[in-house]
Structures are given as C-alpha cells and as structure tokens.
Image (cartoon, rainbow, N blue to C red; front, top):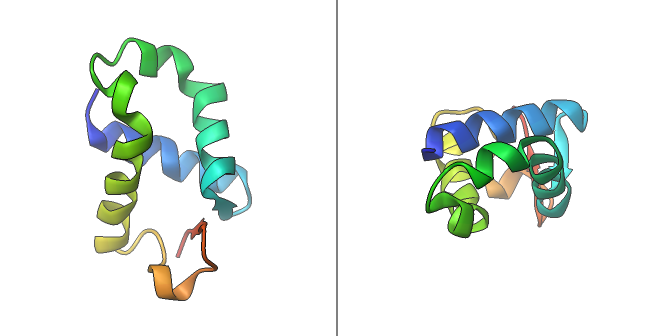
Length: 79
C-alpha cells in the first residue's frame, strides 16, 4: 500500500462526513472501512496514522483539502 491509496481513503472519509471531519473521525472511518486493506498493506499497517498526515499534506498541495489556516484546528475539510 502506498500513500496515494491513503489519499483516496481520506477523500472518501471526508465525503462521507459531509466534507469536513476531525482527524479522529477520519481515522475511525478509515479503520472501520479499510482495516482489511491496511492489514494487507505491509509496513504501512504500523505507520498509517503517521502516513495519513503526509497524505493530507499532499492533498492540500494539490488543492483537494483546505489549508490548515482555512480549517478549524484538528479538522480536515474538502475544498
């Protein structure tokens, strides 16, 4: 599993949460819906909660998620 797959999971989680969610809500959604994929993902299984933050940075860089200054602290939000 690569970080790009985590980006897909994040976007799906945020869409299901109405476009905005706390980091905890997004991680819970990903675990509930993609646990199997994470478990089969090799080493990322042990680092996915760290990698997810880098994935969000990538999504911010390409304009899919609002910047940290545009969202409430601890929340991620789709543009």
